[in-house]
Image (cartoon, rainbow, N blue to C red; front, side):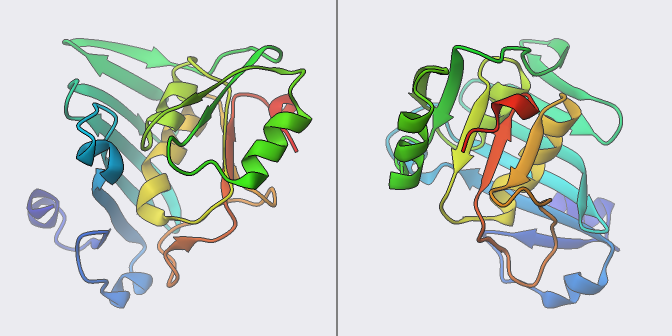
Length: 207
């Protein structure tokens, strides 16, 4: 975070690990940072925790970075320039899958709500598998074409979603709040209170 402050001293910063300075609301540029997304994954010593970094301009993400420290995998995107996956020195442009049946749905390992379970039961004929995955990796896997949907009905925060939203959208996917409205950032209330869904295609918005 100090590197960002030094490189962009005129930008605001919102981070889970720092006191919130509401003067950021007057700044069109705001970095939104989660130094450790997936605390339970970290505690259980899995490889499914991430570092999330996003740059928001006028409430919308324009840069998104998700780094997986244990496996040294990197997902990143720039507005209007696509999304990319970097691993072992190889960089590939990624895009969502075209699958509309036999859907691979991701879920949190620790936050499967009754609303989520009801949605899965209601759409069982279209769902092939439900797999638990940690942190913002769920959105990254959808962006890479390894799954088709993730539905989060509970509360999250801006730093949980800002980076992955751009990665998903630049890969051709859809990221919306549960009421089908757009998620915006650098808000006074940093909680994402409406929940959200990520899908590869409009026809896979399951209700």
